Image (cartoon, rainbow, N blue to C red; front, side, top):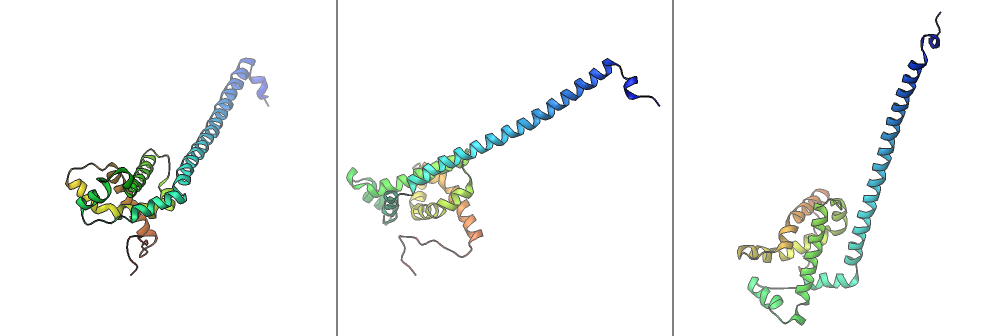
Length: 187
């Protein structure tokens, strides 16, 4: 019987050793790359959570809640009445309108973060669904009139697809459940 080591000379052994070293290096590099990718993903998720929590903490204050209620309490007959009551008034009387605008900008910010994939739609659904639906439905007649008059409404235009998506998600997950709209009387 012939011994394998007798057939191999030093050069063959060196070539095999080098090949095994390269294979081990490649395997190590693949595992290191995967670990680094998982670490980067964890970092991204952590930053997203921190960013979202900053938004949520600002949004979830008593002061901001009062702003939301101030906006929801707005009442008008038509678009011209809306302008007369809330927009074309002295600055000190624009608090309800400022609340409406502030909410729209908050929701616009969420849309931008969603588009950039910095937050997840599920998180927006869980924490903001009710207010986005309420806000959009409360002011939808105004948005439609602004569009008809050629007035740009960036927040409304950007939030409308999010409103539709969240409303659809809610109807699929909670069929028949509706939100209490602060401006409507109980039936």
